Image 1: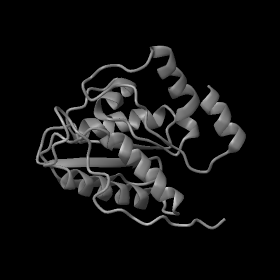
Image 2: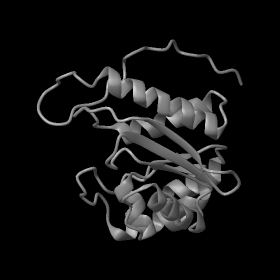
Image 3: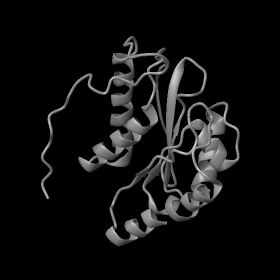
Length: 186
């Protein structure tokens, strides 16, 4: 509720919401009451939500096993008030990792790359959402920001695929190609 009030007070033009409520391992990370507040208070206030497959299935009530299920779930989330939804397909089995951007006004934008086999996937969803926000802050419109962020994630996953940083799932390689800071005028 505080986030919703802050959005109303400061009126940011673009907001990306990564609803981190279910972990990759399937563990629920927040109480049902908090999830209800997110749906009722934030969905209609944000530019884009970026749920993982488990979160999208939970929020929509639709089990997701393929891209058709992703579309049904996205349509349900749009009906709940979202302006746009990026369905992230990285957890689905297959030869491709396909993410699909659904909006109310445009045809779905499917972005697919060959599956990268790696254990270093920790933080991928959070990084994708942050990259979309960063590209939008640089002036890109939503579809181009999503394309650019998907490319960044793909290269970062590939660059870190064989890096060993301990036991279990490690992070993708965020630093594969540092970009100089850009001064934003305004």
